[in-house]
Length: 429
Ligand code: BGC
Image (cartoon, rainbow, N blue to C red; front, side, top):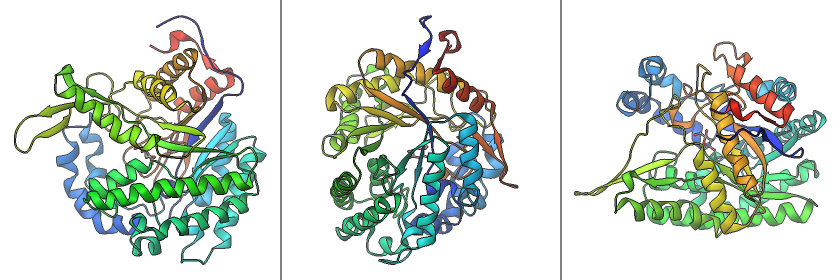
């Protein structure tokens, strides 16, 4: 790697991300119900799912095989401790913070708003601003109020109108204090997980349902875009997108078109239809895929060598560069990296992970890609959806007995990067 320091512009935003359901605690929505219905099954399946895939199964076995691991409960107790969390974000020098508003708190029953919850988020945003931290607001991060679920969630066109009404409510509540918005987090992940793979609520495997959700989310994003722009001058509305970087295993002949197709279906199909001012790139690792001839034919992900996260995802920082280059060349929209992070309970890889990804990000910027900020996922340890609490993504370590936060040493290193607008090239390897 070259020896020039890895420097970022002064106005580059340095942030971290969280989402409501994963950190707040005591949410009542479609996910929390699904957790109760599926905790026993998930704990019983854990060994078969993870024992061969994660680098240290013994370290996580007790948690992963316990049903309690899959119940969000108090989560990271962030709803109650948000002031402390903002103070820690300030102490680390973050200049931006991405969080999500929990629709089920704001509108627990159709048309009935909970003013206390709205005030909570308004206070959250104004405290961020007072701390000199630019908020980035996500309005939907995978969870739905129970009444939305009961009307057939995003499969129902009516949900788009309901969502638009909720968006207007929050846009009015923030009174222009928030300029950066993500209406819907990773529409493709919600769709693939919930309606094709059946692994997230509502647990469907139905192409027609998925297509309805796809269409409705596109309309919902567009409506949110219009609502936000019509009331907030200078607002910027992004599409936060789970970056698929699929590559062919051993460059085998059938794998090549397959990887291309997968990239097209999961990235471009959405990016070319959605309405947005910036792309929120959410990148963790690549997927090296192998097509297995047989009946039925199978597509398998091939584990890669090198350092891997606690979840077994191998580092591939160059993928961030490749994805940003592709997206910018094709869609010509500025980029924020709205999520990038690693599960690393011992905290011996996180600093390296961040620096390597930033190194490749900078390379893309030098080659003309407009990248305006980087948000580490996650600000603090949280519920990793259907995996529960054992994956530790946080800059802050959460003690799940006391809910105390501890600043990890990688968070201090990130803080140094922010202070210096970069780091030395020798720190990357
Ligand atoms: C999601 C987060 C999730 C993270 C790590 C993203 O797909 O937006 O909610 O925790 O990836 O899996």
